[in-house]
Image (tube, rainbow, N blue to C red; front, side):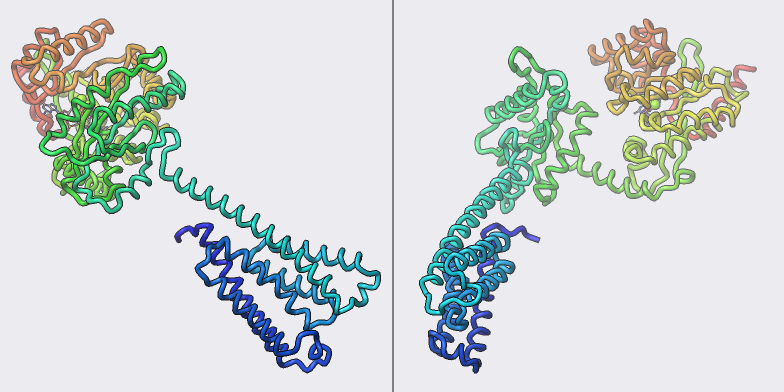
Length: 614
Ligand code: C2E
Ligand code: MG
Ligand code: MG
């Protein structure tokens, strides 16, 4: 329901007064016309004149209430008209006290209907004033007052008019202050209080009728914005944001609108610059925006991410576009993509995720998933030393069977807990099946999500599984991904890690180098068994010195910590050779074995075993 403005409320009240006065005066006139009471008929004004006066008051009040006068002027006129009612009714009743009391009662009723508290106060004041006046005027007043004493009545009505006008004026002033406040609220609801920039609501209103296709939306997100307040205080945090806005204004073309979405997230709306590659432009912008900010004595570095939406593809509303951009930030942070464009490919991936999320909510954990296994190879011993269980989803949605699609969705709900338990139990079953085929230290790696670690029931569950399948902890390796979502400061995670450590489970830190595990963290995870180097560091390593040196430093770190270093995703002989030259001898990748079903693994291990026994 739309909110009424104060002006509308007043006008509505005034219309009510007009209707009420017309109704009341018409009834009064009819009664007076039909009355046979001798006293009334012989009143000061003759019958027809009184009827005419009453009807006139009703009609004029009604017309004033409907007129085009301003609410302010109307109020004054209406007050005068209402206060003339007691005057007109004098002729009906010869007793002044009764006349005034009846008038006050009338006013009280009008006040209750129309002007609420202020008019009620007015009526009360009028009644009190009448009383006082009558008492002062005559000792015999309670019995009778001279009906011809018009001065007294006029004086009374005059006082009442003054009081009414004053109160009415105050009432209006109050209302206009309210109106002002309402206007201010309306403004501030559309602006950000700290930066005075428009907020999302204000933006929506401003661009309501503008063709979205011509608008380029650039989302700018300061990743460490909240930490700034913690480390430097709120004033400096705010100054960084203001400097950032200033930089945006100087670096981008004029005629743009900058909006603060929330915290350190800004949105720039501008016309599409013709013929320029947006991504290139934004990459340059990102570099210049990320340059350190000098605030007071501090040189502050910000992690800045930019997401662009050129609005080419869908006809989405401004709200939806902003929502898409802000929801893409976690992804760009995860992938360290400083500039990300919401292009066709991204949208396809998004709709795949939406489809997958819907289907996943209906999935049956025990029937709709299966595991594939990828062997791990030790080039020093020239044999397989373990294998990793990798989950697959039996789904009809093309592309959604990949864990990179469905695991992040499952991680957003408790589904990952049930899936994780299922994988762990299946892994235990598999490891048990391999007894006799592989040496005891041959480990089966199970990926564990951070969310599982925060679940209180996870540790008791894996302990139960070990007992159920008579396995030793060293036969199951727990792979924890060193992702942004793994918060090593979180108490439940620390508790789980301590328990894992006490039980002596080997732990592998998956995708090492992509998160932010410090040495301190690694120490907590000890006895950490393994650092797992992700594919991105070995991929085309022969062409990149930078990757070679990353590989070398991870290997050296593993050596100094006395933990294994395994490289995953090796696809070529050259990659293997370079890793070997560095000193790495543990591998997992298509070059040695692809992820396959358990039956294939068993076949292969049986063949290997037969070969070695021959
Ligand atoms: P991850 O644990 O780092 O697994 C390695 C991924 O690299 C696997 O992808 C594997 O198939 C792939 N890979 C291995 N060697 C090669 C290679 O030579 N070339 C290429 N191109 N890829 C290779 P996959 O199976 O798609 O798994 C992706 C990620 O999904 C895993 O990364 C892991 O983080 C997650 N995941 C898989 N299964 C599970 C699970 O049961 N639980 C949890 N929580 N996460 C899982
Ligand atoms: Mg893994
Ligand atoms: Mg990995």
